[in-house]
Image 1 (cartoon, rainbow, N blue to C red):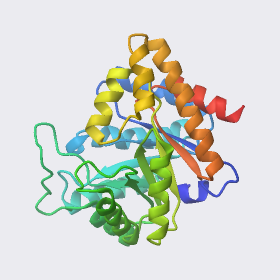
Image 2 (tube, rainbow, N blue to C red):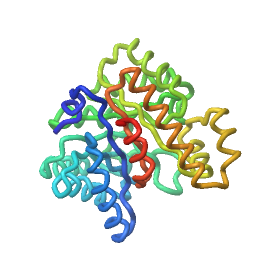
Image 3 (cartoon, rainbow, N blue to C red):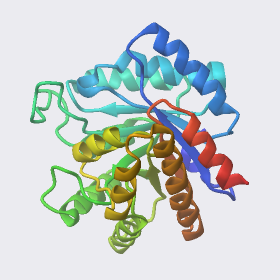
Image 4 (cartoon, rainbow, N blue to C red):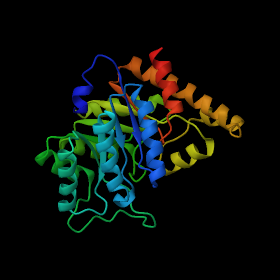
Length: 287
């Protein structure tokens, strides 16, 4: 089922992102996690795509098996990095043949050891080109990434949001945002996109804080910020992993409650392949 149809329900849709493990043992463990996640009745899950398409085969395997064996509606990530148009068409054909209805189209990060994005000679330079290519030839629901605080490579937020508007015009059906910890950033982003004429669903992305050092590294990489009050609280408990996890659950639960009251159609959780915090947050929201 297309995510656009799933979002027509009368209650917020919860969804979860996972990444393909590198080992077969890791894959087996992830499938046990997915079985646990299914009990939360998510609207869908998404599976990421490694830099340079490094996990392409595992991404496709995961979305196919999650949908067809576990019964979880799935969305595959797809990037421009390292792929010709023919290779991308072959991937899309495989997804369609497996019954996958959803894809998120991304430019993608450069492969490890490469600082700048270099498009394939017969590929796409921008995510908007990939969106247009999919939209023209495939009956898929197309998601695109939005950045409430602006993309780290963009000179400013407005420039980045103008580019997102191009992706929407190219055929994007839904926007899923990068993680953020201050809802005011999301509200500003959403308002500006509506002012630009964007009417499609905008789904906030939430990452529960589970490890202080990890979240600091992650935000530095993606350009998101940790609010001063949150950073101050975390620094006082950073050596206590249980306390950090509990703080992350409490903060994310409050974020989600406010976003739901604001009227968002759903919440997309960045799980880092861990189900405990996400499960507690969803249980809090449904209690």
